[in-house]
Image 1 (spheres, rainbow, N blue to C red):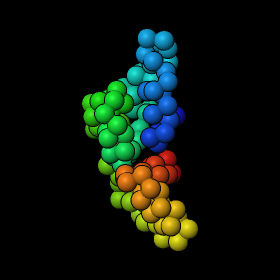
Image 2: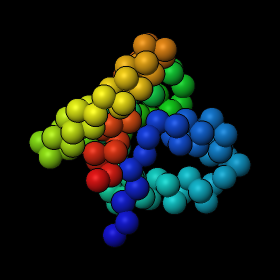
Image 3: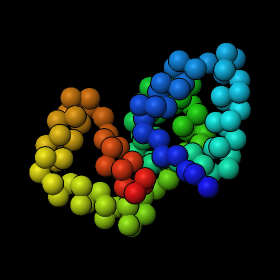
Image 4: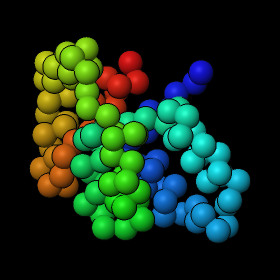
Length: 113
């Protein structure tokens, strides 16, 4: 079974540009994949999108436990490995500072791994 690990960007695009009433088959398939556990993400992505105060934020709150999981020990070890590289530390700190928000990228990478 294929599982898709989502970062905040694709979710934002999906919810902002693909309206449920205009793309019913897309949403039926997406909702089915959520129900079947084929769509996953991390709680850090949920933290990023819940601040938007829109349909995505509400959906994220409703699906917090089903889709947005807490990282496992193995995933946290992978995040540690990512942060041990100076280049990634600098990039993520800058991104976090610029947006003033949580950074989910290393958690999404470790989840997909």
